Image (cartoon, rainbow, N blue to C red; front, top):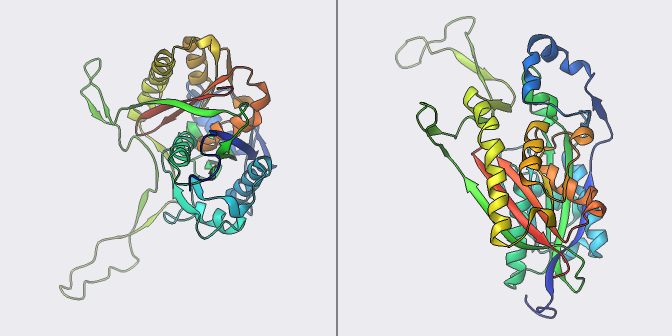
Length: 358
């Protein structure tokens, strides 16, 4: 598929974002229990004013469709021109297939368009751009659509601190060959992965896996009358039902939030900038936005030309934060270099360097 235009640069030629219209403020009654019973949540989770949330009859995939269509329109492409669909729906209705399949159907994408869900919260968009860029430059596809949507306002426990940050949204980008040098293109990336948390302060090393996750809780339910096993006659163990899926964070996860979450993203950006001989003053950064605590720490230590975030108005859109901010804040990015900074609960942090005019 290399064909005509193989010498052109590969750039982000379209972008779009969409959020549900309903606005939830900090005074919403849904937060009353938390404020009354656990006011200490504000030590880590703060900086939000409003957030967009889905109503019960709304779907995040509909927002993704709107964002994706905006990106295609900007790129002057039709649905049939898309060879590769990358991204993720978090949280999808089903464990598999991911809701990206529904997006393919709703948009009428071609049967030859490959769907690749990228379950790498919260750097899904970063991964999508890097993979799309590589496959296009290799001549394997022509046009790639990267779409990420988050609906975590439905998958948090409103008796736990992270719930105050939860918001919904979707962002999209089209990657393709182009003659337009003003478009951003992928230059480089850097990642730190720490699945084993190192020993520190007398605490031995331990796995990060399972300290922040989405899952259910089992609830034992004794049957009204013990039911015997048909072979042995013994009473069967109690039955179980389960809560809906929601975001869990353990005590260790909270420690990682304030440890790795503060320091590792700073390190990964500094490595990336050093390797590319760029001073912080030459770059704009937009990042995953969990809390003002983290954003301020990153901004203060790195000191970029601009640290762009929408935390006070859009809150934490999880995997959609980076693509939404990329599209929403695009006109405010005055530097020719842009860093997209992601972080995730396994633990990892990833920074992708984009450049235009080169």
